[in-house]
Image 1 (cartoon, rainbow, N blue to C red):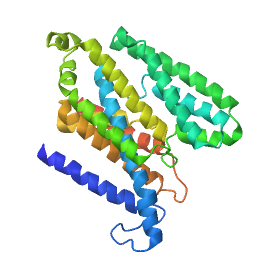
Image 2: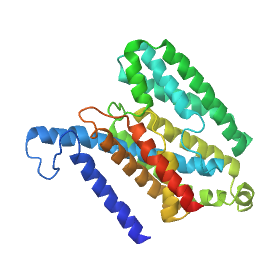
Image 3: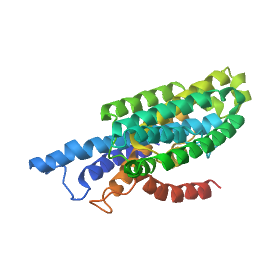
Image 4: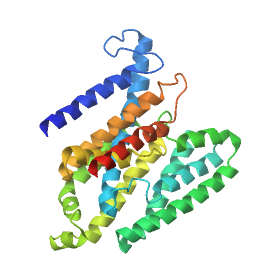
Length: 310
């Protein structure tokens, strides 16, 4: 176990160095003496790298919580329609201010919270019915999003589709806010580790062991949805991070959440750092949507995990 934590720590250093150096032109972080290279490294690449790390960690934490909350190993941060409502909000913002990234981010955050409040009405129904309600709500928000895209002015379409496929290049949330959200989310998760471990045994067993399952479900739903709202607002819709990383970390570190949650917070960040580095390097100076690369990476990894577990 110690060796695995050491490998994860080495992975942080390696991914950070790769993320700093890679791009349209390779820059050695230890030998950037001219002002231009310094500006590229510390004012452009480093903030984006830290944004990717924080967003990936938040998505992985949300995925771990949703999988326990819903009792479904296929649950992920967007399963209850929060991403759909955020996308609808983002496109609504673009309808009023097509050239404003701020309006898109504000609309996404407002839309995500509308989705959260809607889902909270179904939190008392139990995990299976809440999941079914989430699937229906996701379909509803998809229909609303399609209608809004049909009405969106042409000058806003490119920005909307770019954001919907994952975009870390225009995040309006300051890096320090995202890192603070990452730290607060991990801290809140660690406070709930015992209750989460009990919930893995089933709701009846958890109640017999003194856990207020209804209250825990509401707290987890609110926390996971709020974390998803922050991540979606910052970087758009990025799939598979919240689905794959918790499974991978449970395979490496066991099922106890005092290990799974910090490992997921770090592992999700590293995956998104690598995916974003590849997205801005493969076809440089153009960029690929990072959501496409997380899907390309995530699908084979998840299939491998399914075969391994079987």
